[in-house]
Image (cartoon, rainbow, N blue to C red):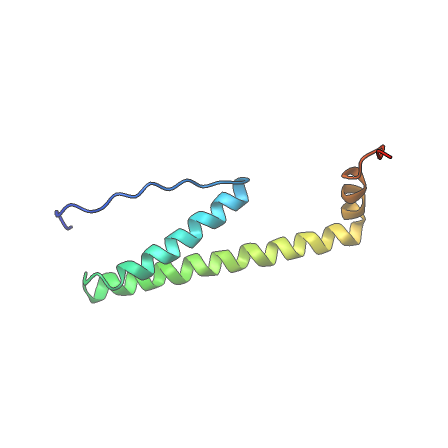
Length: 93
């Protein structure tokens, strides 16, 4: 393990739970990519490449699941009920 000081970074995630998870996975993939060029060694670089690929794979799975859930909502009519509930009851003239 390296003992030299490193720059600390502070991160703020925003949005709903799933939005924050997606942001974190994007960050993990990006940091794993950056760390691969830090000269840790072949074994760590291989591990970092695996971590990057895993994070990107999970992001893809989330996107697929969101699409599937949206399609199911459309099929069952739930999406239409949700759309209608977002309309205001009264419109101003």
